[in-house]
Amino acid sequence: MNEPSQIAGSEGPTEAYVKRQERFAAVVQALEASSKRFSVARFVVFGAGAICLLMILLRAGAPNLLWYLAAVLCFGVFVALVVAHDGVLRRRDQGERFRLLNHRALQRLERRWEQVPVPSLPPSEPPCPYARDLGLFGRASLAHLLGGASSPPGRKRLGQWLSSEASADEIGARQESVRELAPLLELRQALEVAGWEMGQEKQDPELFFRWAEGPVWLRKRTGLRWLARGLTAASLLLLVVVSLGKLPIQALLLLWLINLLVGYGAARWIHPIFAQASAREGQFAAYGAIFEILEGRRFESPRLKELVETLEATGLSVHQEMKRLHRLVEASDTRLSSFHFVPQGILLWDFHVLEKIEKWQLRAGNHIRHWLRVLGDVEALGALGGLAFDNPDWTFPEIVSQEGTTVVAKDLGHPLLSSTQRVTNDVEVGPSGSFLLVTGSNMSGKSTLLRSLGVNIVLAQAGGPVCASFFQLPPLRLATSIQVEDSLEEGTSFFMAELKRLKMVVDSADDLEGSQERRLFYLLDEVLRGTNSRERQIAVQKVLSHLLAKGAIGAVSTHDLELANLPGLDQAAQPIHFRETVHAPDSEGAVMTFDYKARPGVATTTNALRLLALVGLDET
Image 1 (cartoon, rainbow, N blue to C red):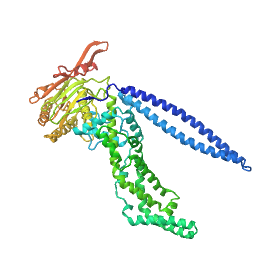
Image 2: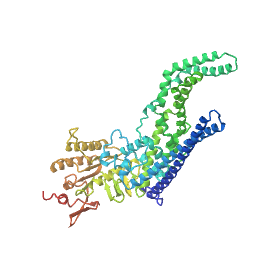
Image 3: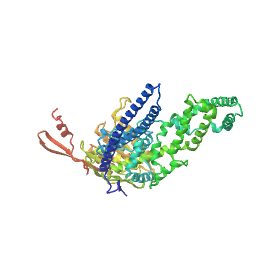
Image 4: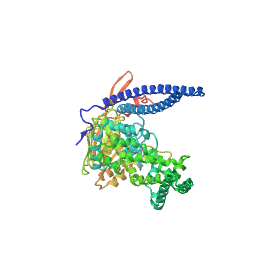
């Protein structure tokens, strides 16, 4: 059953974003004023401290304790002001990010693409064959429309979902989660802001993963571990004995020398391990703010509940585990200090730090990839939830069983067009053994209808809402030939490029023949336009007959009105058409308009010669 993407009667997206933008703008303004006051206070306190130091220097011959106390007080107040000021600046910057986030959300509603940064979703492996045809990535794309996934794992997961199909059960589970996240604007934006800075950098945590999931070194050397513990205990005991005057200090110095020899003898193995642990730990620790937002969050949908529960697999929250590792890595950085020999000589510092790091590694190391996958899933679901919140009149599609072979859409529109520009149509593609034949004159809307079908199927199979009032489909695999280009680099002509695309479509149909899981859905726009009409008709007849025989369903747009009458296609074609209206000439000549509404049957008019006249080429 199709359901609206947002709860009826709730605050509309425009009103919500405007209120939040104004609220955070006021917060930023207040914090900016507070920052200026802190700057003045810091300058005054610094000046007062400078005066105190100057008076101390001038009265060096007759020192006054009050000037010293005043100087110390000024120093303490200055440090406190710096710390407090930094907190104000951090809150101001965060408030500005929230303000900007809501500003961009408003621009996204209006499809003002130039006001919204283009997300850098990583390419899928293997590359999605229909991404360019349907405008999934890049400027003014589906990915550009979807906000919410700001961290690298979130962007990666969202890109994967847009580039591949999911099972009916998986789509249903995602839909439940998207419905739950849609009204949770505070949570979704908090996650997006927390991942903001990570999203600005290219990060490859593979080095850190390799260490965290790899073998331990000290844990396998039981004798060395007990030697380090014994030497540390002996060192502390001897320190007490020497302090009581029971033994000369030379005994303690000798033991410390032994500790240094043992510690630095093992450093050739220990320090590279420390370097591996700290190589990407800083980037990993940056995720702590995002996981902290999810800590203790209770969800109702089974998928979200399961995802969040797995974040406490070690008995601690991910945020706590990250903080613990960060402290251990900071302790390991003592090796970089000039005074490292002191804790090393007394305590064999490196051994104890490494032992604790390896305990962390054994407890949490194998969970790190999963934690980031969970984060990616939550962010991708949040991005789809944001789309549902932004478009309350859209619907969640119904995925029918494989026995169903028809795609039915009511009020279908293109998601990338704004609501003021979008024209919707009722469309039905299928059942098996038939295809939708879309005809009409130039610029009338044929290609847009094909892309509307494709993009909404992508959204449906990602688990999101679709731009329609009703949408029903079986599990599908998309194959398209819409935006074909030749290649000078590869020496491929336009016609050969078209043939290669058609070969991919046909091969996909062959692969899915007899499949119980999904069937092929193809979109062919002006197929084989790179050859003459007679040969094109023969070739198109063969291709479509093959696709029909394999049980594939799809839509074909064409200017060739004879396709509907070709043997073998005349009974399978379900024709619809778009038309244009030519208005009486005015001072600037004849005017042609389009209503972009699909009508039954084959097109009855063409407009190529009229368009020639409109641009002044009719007399050339």
